Structures are given as C-alpha cells and as structure tokens.
Image 1 (tube, helix red, strand yellow):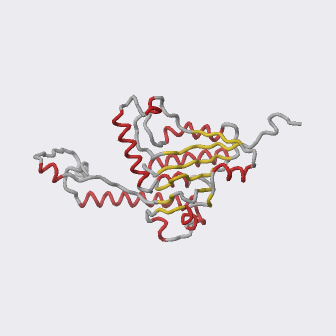
Image 2 (image 1 turned 90 degrees about the horizontal axis):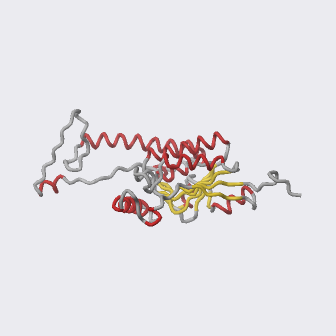
Image 3 (image 1 turned 90 degrees about the vertical axis):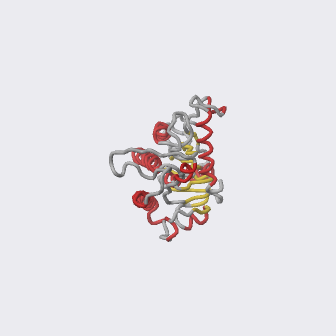
Length: 269
C-alpha cells in the first residue's frame, strides 16, 4: 500500500549557471550575477526538500567579485540546509566558471569539458598615437595624483602598470585560496594548476580539480536512486529577449552577446 507523503521519490534540484559572469549590469541583459541568482538559489535549496542540489555549469568566467559572491552564497545555503552540492560541467568551467564549480562538494565533467584557467586577467587598448595622428587632444583634470590611471588615450605609465599588477596578484591569490580551501587534499600540488592554464576533464581530474567523469542525470540516479526526480531552476529570460530584443536597445544586447561569445571562444567552445 502506498502511503502519501511517506513514499515520495528523492528529489534533486538543478540550477543552471549558463553564461559569462557579471558581463552586464543592465536589467534583463545576459550573464550571471549574484543579485539575479539569489532568489533562484534560495528556492533551489528549499523547494521540495531536495536531497541534493546539482549545478549545471557552462561559463567561461568573468567578474571575480560576482564569482566570489555567487560561490559564497551557494556555500552558505548548502551549510544552512545541510544539503550536498554537485557541480556538472558542460562545455566550459574556466576562470570564474571554475570558481563557481569549486563551491560544490563534488565536481563532475564530460570528457570533452574544458576546465581551469585559475588566473586573473586585465585587458584593454592603447590609442595615444591614433588620436595624435587625427589631431585629437585628450584633456583630463583630477584631484589626487593616482586618480587617472591606465587611460587608454595616454601613453602607459609604468607606475600605473605596477599598481595594477599588485591588484592582479592579490586577486589571483584569493582565487588560489578558494580552490585550495574547497578542493583540499584532492589537489596534487602540480605547479601548473594555478598558472592560468586550462585542460580537458581527464587532466583536470589528475590535478584534483574534479572528482570524475560523469553526466548529471545518470550520476544523480546512481547516488540517489533510479526514481530520483529533477526540477530545474534558472533566471527568467525577459519576454523581448526571447526574440533577440530588449527594451534597453538592440545595440547593447548585440555587444553583450559578442563579448560573451568571445569569452567562450577563448576555450574553443
């Protein structure tokens, strides 16, 4: 005899983390950020009293701050509700994308998934000669000797570069500490782990960055039973964006899409 509420199948709530991280601050634009994901994650950890939360990750990275905020929120919720978290990497979990994966208790990937890129990058353009050739004069007035730094229309200042390098190194160490804290003894200590290099899943497993090769549904069934039920949670796509449009304008959406596509292509995805 089936007794209601006592013979319920185990439940795994799935959160999709798709796209570049913090790529746009405009309302309704693409990309992952903590503010948009907060209510999604809150629901995923409580709705239906799940036995586990699975993160389906496909991200080339992005903002270090947003990566840290999202990963920290996942850990707080996991600890509060005492629910295990499994990350499943699809095409890419690189840089900030791997930061998100590191919030999980276990990380799984497809054999062809790209993982790693544990580093920090700052990139831009320098156009001082271009504007000079066209008779354009750059005028900047500041109060504070260091207020104007790394101006793309001025020659690069070695002091500015040195200050930026300090910030990048400090941020890189914070990223390294996150990975070491979360992966612990599973890391092999290989020198290349934190160089910013990236690998396919097999090598990532050898380095201790993932726990194995597996796909979401079969792995969760193996762990929680063949009758496990899934429910997927994710940020809602605004109505106009479903048709490639946005109330904020086509140009901004197009630029955001190009930027995100370029981020994925760095990893061959």
